[in-house]
Length: 117
Image (cartoon, rainbow, N blue to C red):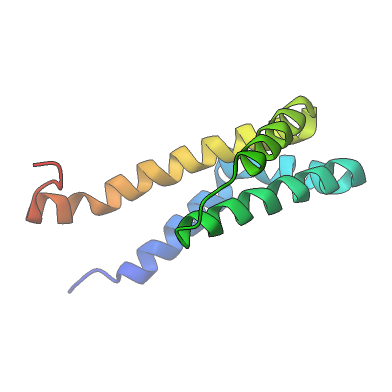
């Protein structure tokens, strides 16, 4: 009898939700949202990030002014303790997801070979 991949995926989801990395991310996110000034600053940062990503995806030029504004915003949010902790937790969670993706894709890479070959 074959393995039900969806059941395995739901087990992985459950494991992620119970992981220290996710718990730390959720706690950091909740802390930022509980602080009105941090929440506003973080939302502003996210909006700038999304606008620049959309422009890139649409092949539009990003002006020097937009780059400078984004850099100033990044510097500002990195100085905010709660947002800085959230960004660190996001980065750790992103690394975990990347590692999980590599593990999940391993059978296909073995079957077809690595793209880099």
